[in-house]
Length: 65
Picture 1 (cartoon, one colour):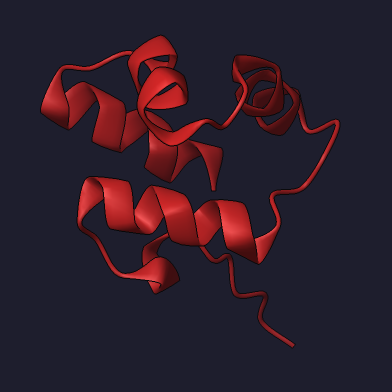
Picture 2: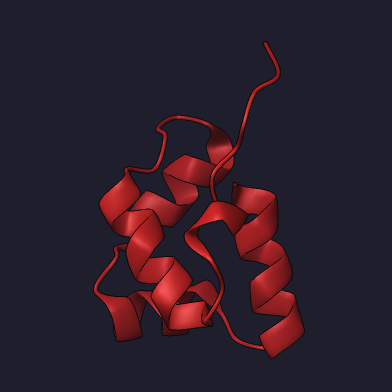
């Protein structure tokens, strides 16, 4: 998930700080996702999907069974 977030930041030439400011999602949350200390909840992913204008599915990791 974080790879998708990072790619979107790079493509749009914006910072995690700007996303945090615009969405209200803490930079600490982004850092914890990056380090693997926590997993994002669907509500936060939904906010990011809307912010970036991409489908929610872009952020959801599907594991093969």
